[in-house]
Image (cartoon, rainbow, N blue to C red; front, side):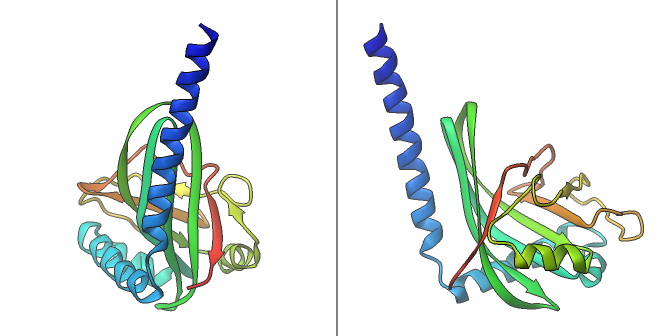
Length: 186
């Protein structure tokens, strides 16, 4: 019995490692130019799908966009993606996002993550950090507006706001707690 349990755990960990290694390798192949083009496409989709998004982006101090965050898991899971931080409409730095999880899970998905810094102080703290962790170094509010919904800068009071866009519009009930954001060179 003990040998079967050890073998099962080994298979689970190897599967998760292979999945995460493959996803990370895919994401690492992007050049700065490829990331920037993907960020442009993601922001265009955001503006097209969510009423008020353009005004929201104009009011932002900074926008961190991860065009493709890959998530995979089989009991043990993880996610990884690379993106760009834009200030006043231009890329100033590149970042990766990574998170791990344990629990009942199976499968893989790709999502777009857009994090908007509404206050200069929060953006400055984020940029100065050497590995910023959501829920520890700062709190991110995920807005639940649904596909085709409307957002309004006058009603959003959170200093950092996130949107997760899936293949069918905005997804809800997504947690970023524990996600680690790290500056990368491109």
